[in-house]
Image (cartoon, rainbow, N blue to C red; front, top):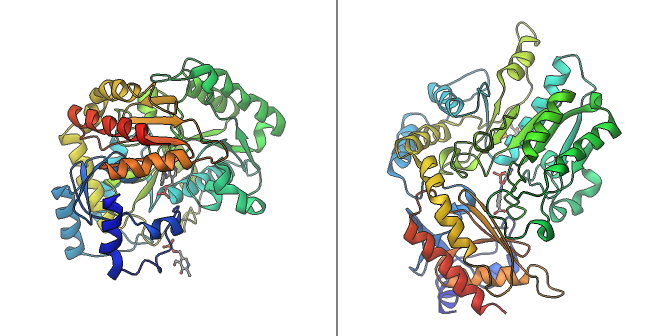
Length: 448
Ligand code: PXG
Ligand code: PLP
């Protein structure tokens, strides 16, 4: 508790009132703030000079670890050379270089890259491209979008509409975009508790897509969007065969399949993409976060070249083909960070490293089975979720307390509802994996 008290002292000169914090319990936070001041490698340092192990790669985004000098140098150089250049009717070489590098690690033919500045924007972009694609093909009636329960696709109106997290939707329920339906979510603890890797149970849930298609008719459906592995909702690992079935059904009905890889992209599962890991190729991939190690905001969509060509070739001979883009699409500093980051991933074989560490990580997290309150543990690659039995009448309170206890003991974790989530930088070593879950184990023993 000392740490928290000291933080309050340190922040006495700091006015906390103006910053309306995102996805934060503002009142609770400002009463006992948790402030970080620097970061290097696997660790943050708090304002009271305590090392805090980064168990979550920031918000699932700092995959190469903190303070990478090559990225710092690339961004500093770029800002000195040219701070900003428009991407509307103008360009700069690094934007093209970044697109080529990203395309180079995408699955076959998903090599046309549209830049945005966040995952939410990447999702909006992918949904709009799907609708524009069908229209360009002369099937303008294909506008319906299918998401999934418990899906997280950011916070834009498109993203919350196809998303399936109630808390993010209920305030805005009357304002959702029309023509959306949802697949059922795939977690079933009574059938697949403590699954290591992909659960055996649940592939049949993909057949629900056939039911939805029969209800609305395929001719009205533009796209299905899913996270190949759901992160935000509490680490829901796809059942074996599930994604393959979704792919087959989409192909059969001419529906585009979009993978939201904002979390799974860039090595989280031991491959560049979850698509590559699962051997299932969607028509578009939305990404962000680790695309440039989160040094500068950036998101992107990788679209199959046929999607790009259909929209661009059916557009006017002279004139804009797709009325979409952001002031900061392919921002020079973000593009510089992207190129430097992808070079680090390749040079250090970080995706392979994540794949090699995954069994160690799996064993360490499953050793928490039997600890107080632990109801389920799920993992894949370098992602794990530890679901706790909720405190009666106080959903989320127990995981919040566990998160605070971890922070006091020097570990940054995430929680959503009563689920703790872990997704460390891919540079983590075996000793740090053991340290991380031993802190979690100790924290759980002290949680009421
Ligand atoms: N899609 C997915 C699959 C995501 O995980 C977004 C879209 C939105 O990205 P932006 O950059 O607009 O936030 C995300 C973001 C958490 C957590 O710990 C997860 C995200 C963001 C913040 C916190 O649950 N995912
Ligand atoms: N709002 C106004 C008034 C604008 O002029 C613009 C962009 O020019 C936007 C919103 C969109 O901003 P961005 O391109 O950064 O998404």
